[in-house]
Image: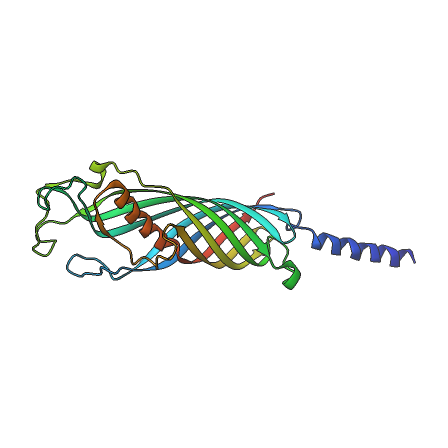
Length: 253
């Protein structure tokens, strides 16, 4: 009888432990996720070495903390570098040939994020941080731009260029902060009791460029600081639109 009671209590204890949030008592993990999306450049041009298709690569770093059986919270930071081809700046109203910038621009962007993951505990028995999940994320995005390449008369197909070539840095434009909302889903598994593997997808909308497609807004003409900021944020919006992730994590505490 004692053996039966002991066995029953052991089974109940194991079952209760299995239903507790976290994995083997650990609720905190850190991870790195390379995030990929396809960029379709609408200005694809072999003459200027502008590709028609490219790849956006974003580097995401997160810390995930389990709040309950089906919920976790993940603060994070995101880094991405991308390009704007065939961009023109002329903010002083001068004639086309006098002073300005025409060329390609390099953009560096940093996103500060807060993500909620909802694991399918009721439907699939997934207990955070393991199993299938849906996610909701808020992102504050800060970007800066710098000169990548000038176009000269021949690079510009025989069209006039500016008599005085300013760099992007000469304008000292401040890029407005952008705000993004990201929806996603995926599956996270644990190996060797410590290693996390996370695969998933993300759909991001960046205000005010809510429905920018995957990178087609790649350049344009800016007459002002506000106009240039708008071009940069439109390009960044394209990098958040649709992404696929493959992440690696490690359980800490």
